[in-house]
Length: 369
Image (tube, rainbow, N blue to C red; front, side, top):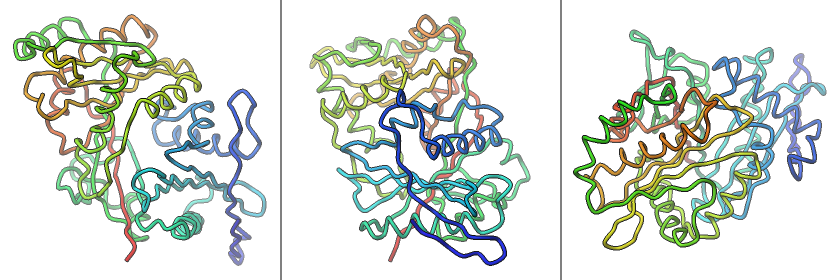
């Protein structure tokens, strides 16, 4: 725990809190306060909780796992919760990096509390040998309307509003804007006529490949080749200057990921393209769903492996999964996804399927030395 004296503003403490052992165990007062702060922030920013983790998701995520340590902090002013902070600390790859996040409750902003929370997080991470800090900050697309003064990302694709509070905060503390992602929204279900049109345009190029789909856990006979694709997902998508190392995925890591998601109440659909000549999976896409947020589906990973591109497989697997989702999750009304702005090919697929930009996310980095 760290305590800072702030003259007339009172005394701010930043303290690591425990994460409940399971969602069923209920939330401690501290972790419940952390979740309430996250939900209040999402409602203020977006007007809904579509992008916010449920309580069960938050508990299981912040427990961490053998691949990543995760720490949660609350900031209190004279005993009143005024903010939170988190650290994510990779343990298998990228072991000199740390993910940082700071949230300050609306009534307590512009008083230096966010800076004190960040200082505590960076100090802990530095003490653990971390020399590169990553942070993310999203907002609705309306904030970068034409005429807004913006800061361009180092990747050269995308920008954030220069005078927005998160931008000023990041720049003040030495972070650089490496990359911008666009979040896009698709009204659901997608019209079948549109899916057929898109399918007809790429199907002739996809000869020699077969579609394979599953719900929940990957079939045992596919898990090893699926793990190979999961590893490629960390190296074959644009990462600008973020300099992350590739992740090593095997069947055990796939299974741990599946078990954690299912334990949080989540469901998933995967569509993959299998190369007929070799039996290897050449492409895949994943949709996830939560009963606690029934209106929204997340479009997660989509990847076509090198050597199999140019065959329309990205479009084919996305169409197959959208059709499966229509039957599996009839209460959903939208699909939400994220893409790096320089990933023009995947953005073009999404646009063809009817996705519209809804927000942006700045990806920030600070390197020591």
